[in-house]
Image: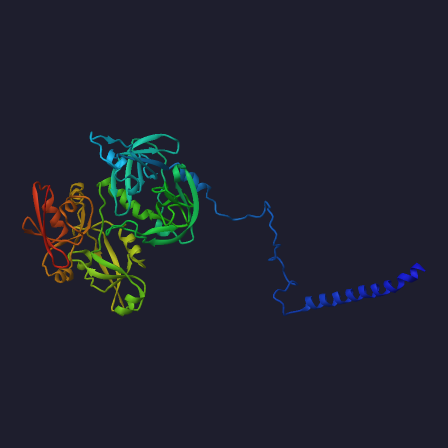
Length: 487
């Protein structure tokens, strides 16, 4: 009776299973013979792999290896500590009311820190100008924890680089690579001492090249930074940017951040610029800077349309300066510089970076666009004085004493200002001119009633001079002015 009761269920179940088997077999046959699918699994399947991951000794997994570069770098990167004397704070400054006994409240020295890279085994170390500028005491700690006092060999605010030296020998160094060969997307390491955490290594890629971020705040500043996403923080300044072969390719200098800490963007000075600065500071005590003798502008789509230029690659020559290399090479206002020595020029940062690698007296080939035709010319680069001979520390000290930078004027500018000679003050810092009241833009036409027509002539007249000096000149608006000061 019980079997009879279940027989009504067994037969339908059996038939249903049989039907499912038949349908599955038909569908399988159709899928194997179907030629409209995206993949034919009936052929060679050697290119097929399971999506799961496993490790096997006979299967090499390629990943970036930073071990060699890190081992080469950490011993050649140093920790720099600086001290700056600060005057005592008066009681009125501290408490808000005067002290009738004339006392002052003493203050301790200000302190800073950064990084540096050993570039010669005899103790020469490159770092940032902003790390050691104006420091009263510089202390260098090596990776092996030895500590030395350092002296400044030379400073270059225009590139934010400095060369210092310690009394030591047989030091580990970092070999210099070629920043021109760096590619966007290439792996790099940042080595330094962020937040006083010594011998710190971070990794990232080259995000961009020839960046101008306007951080130096100097008209003569050279900004052609390598941008990376390697983590860089306070204290990394002056440290090494290294490629995976362990070669120095940049000096870390800055970050872009709204917080003061790393947010994804860091910037390094290319080693091809640093190499030249290091050599000059060691040999001369001052950088032998080459100039094209032009005022330049970025070539934007608006400017190209306005001037009828049919390409957006290159740098626009806004003005050719009198007596400069460009004038001698017959460049004209409105030309577009497109390459130097066969290296393409895409931006002002790129152009400044390339020129920074040359010295006055070097001859280079320039390609430029004029009336949408490509032309080539040879330029003999000159210094800011319009010469090819090296500048001495004594001559440099005149500019430092005055606290200003100067620029020769083009024929166009002279005509515009209604004068026949003069030298323009392009930047003012602490020094004799600022103390006398001179402002940026002032054009010096006479020194002690004698005409001045070039930066070189101005420095020659002031070199070795003592006593009172009278400057005559005019501002761009036409206002004449006279200033006196003592040397």
